[in-house]
Image 1: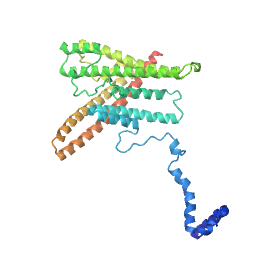
Image 2: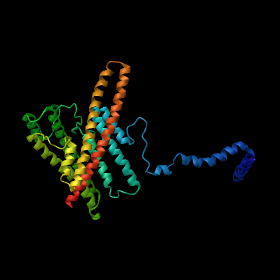
Image 3: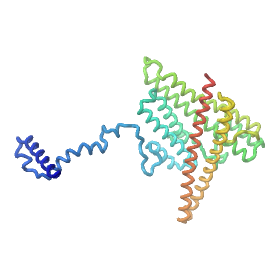
Image 4: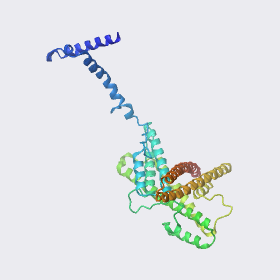
Length: 382
């Protein structure tokens, strides 16, 4: 019965079509077989839903920016521009440790950019400051790893394991002078000299990052002045300017404190009772002591820094293992032993993934701790 009813409906539809075209020749319903008419009518009924299912120009999927792009198989990131940078770094043959550091920085950038897209979809970030900060951070990454296309870009080598002190320069006469004094003073053991060199390198990175940030902030503010008419009032809101300059001020304060510490350690040697050894943790602790923390908060922060330092040491351990595994893998590739090569590749892949994972955790923890200190320092200035 249902089939018979459908045939009758189709036949009726055919006659209507025939009547509509009666001036052009014989009735269509009389000539077209029922089966063909059925196909035609069902095709018309199905066509709109097919168009909707594939997401046309005005579909919800196409116009809803909240859904993040999916990662293509075989790619490292969901965002195409980050994948392009990653592939460029591969072509430049970065060391395994530098690749893992870059991976962490790009993962953090991707997370922040996807969060910003959600904010934008919800109508937030009206003044565009979050977007401007993302652009600045991206420029810092490009400059940090020499991926900005500038021939004179300073590559910051984050591989502290196999870059001998003679193979690098500090790009600052004051730092060079302090380092040479410390090396010849006889106050440092071989292990302490390695630790001090790491502090010098960390300081160099901070200065470079500050200079890139200063340049991008200045460029952004200058472009605002050129684009917006003076009749509109201040081109950039006061709170936005304050946010940018606070960020620069915090970094400059950290640089100055870091230099004072390097000068003191270079002249006096390491204090046996010193709280921490890792440069980033020493920076945080020095800044925390000048922030508006109660004694209880400071004690709690000290304990958290101890956990953070342990996390960094674990990350360093995996970095060393990754470098050793990389050297072994290169050696085994030359022997032609497929079974041995397969085992080494598996181990290398495991260490590479673990190093990236720990690197991300360290970077995120550092970001959280720095934010807390920054709030305490800003409270001091109120």
